Every structure is written in C-alpha cells, then in structure tokens.
Image 1 (cartoon, rainbow, N blue to C red):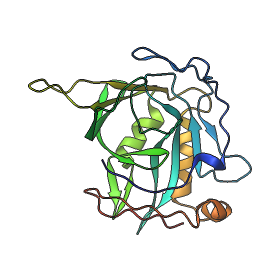
Image 2: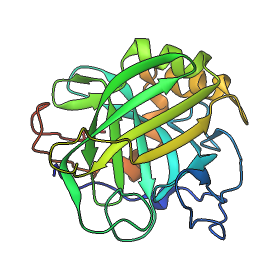
Image 3: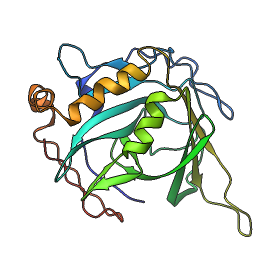
Length: 221
C-alpha cells in the first residue's frame, strides 16, 4: 500500500457527531451536515472542509486544501480519517487490497482518480505538478458546479475469480453550506501568495514522501 507521512488535522476543528458512525453498508454517516466551511480569519482561505452525508467508511472530514507543487499551486482533495486504522469499510477485517482504487462520480459524470495514503488522511488526485498530486482544473470545475459527489472505492481483496466490488462509498453534498462559492474561494489561493504566507506556521515544516507513479511527493509551503 502506498504510504506518505504528513500533517494532521489539528489545524482546524470540525463540528461532527460520531454517535451514529456504525453503519451497515452506506448509510447516514452520523455527522452534522454542515456543508462546506472555509478557513476563518484570512482574506484568501487555504482550505474548505465538509463532512460526508453518507458513508460506510472511517472518514471524518473531506477537505479541499491549497498545496504548493514544484511549479504551481493547486488543490488536493483530502479525506481525513478517525481512528487508528487505514481507510476501510467500517467493521472490515484485515483483508484490504494493497492496490485500492477510487472513482469520483459527480452528478452524471464519472472521473478516474488516484489514492495516496498518509498517516491520518488520504489524498484523492487526478493530476500532478511534478511529484505533487493535485486535482485537475477540469475536475475542480465539476466539483465547483456540481451538486452531489460520490466517491466509490475498491478497498478489499476480491474473491478469486470474481471482479472487484464497490465496498466503500462516501457521498458529499457539494452545494450544502457555502457550496460552490467555497470551492471558488479556495481556488483563489492558487493565484495569490498571501493566504499561504498567513498559514505558513501550519505548513512550513510539513514534508510528504510517497512511493507512487507520481514519484516522491514533497510538500513545500
């Protein structure tokens, strides 16, 4: 399984309720449906956070995060996890596949993406700037304008002779809360230096490394 070492979710608090987190299949997540919330106290936010409206996975938060690549700044889609285990269906055993995959379905369109794993979050990306995995402009356009995003995962090993089944789902209401305006606000950070400077202490020492087709992943902010 791919592995990277990265920063934790500690730089913001997420108002979630885990009381209903045990699910069978993909059911209501038990999280408060807060919709997109932007980083506070800055002119240009460097992240927006929301929670799944429905999932059978150990996902605590979904984050659009502004990241600096070798030649440009872009956005990552990050899935922050609760608990100590890897991304997995709730109640799953140890039979996880070492080559997990994900598809991103937004309204009626399907988009292929890659999964990269950190200690407590997972990166979903469909492009890269050098070694930095990012979301493409085309996919960001759809995220900004879309209404419903469903992430479909293949996380567990398939039975011999059978096709891999979708065993993990996370649904996000893209227009809840600040909606597309939140996505547009975070996209402004790709053109401005000030937001990243204001957040410098949180990001300056973050360093990521990954064994992946994208190559070694490094974080420079």
